[in-house]
Image 1 (tube, rainbow, N blue to C red):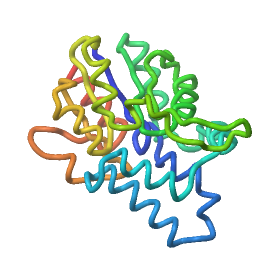
Image 2: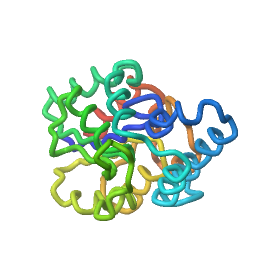
Image 3: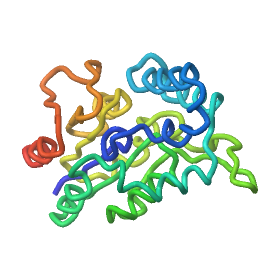
Image 4: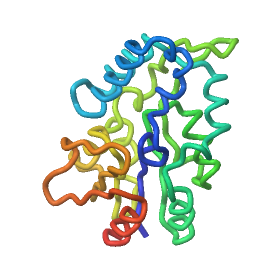
Length: 218
């Protein structure tokens, strides 16, 4: 059986979580909203490091715990079509499924509960909150807030082969390029970034194509 590491944003769900969490704050300021999206894209396409992109976005608008709770209550509205059923099937077949994301940990944890992914196979960015649920800072001890590669380097030795990274961004491709997984499947149903394609890598343009590629690698 394979070890399958899923990204969350624009992979398991069809949106970028942090943008959704602060949408109400940015709704009346289109230029600020556009700038926020550009910061997200810079981090996903290699213009900035993930840490730079995250810090810049949180400086413009940061979520509250209440925003996270409201978002997780409507996860069923934002799943990528077919993804929950696919994850259920993969778990039933005995694959080791992980969810690893630059989204806030509380969101990824809630998604893992919905999908039946064990909580010790969930990783997200840990944010620190004040007593009222307001954002304080990124947890300085959290390696995933710096880079997915750095965070996963601590885990990869325990993965059974074959291991597959599935995601839409350069942060996901980097996990493969750094040799932490055996295969990378770019998921391009929502966003197609040329920078993550190339070589002998085959992309999945839908959940159905993704399932076939997972089967071919495992």
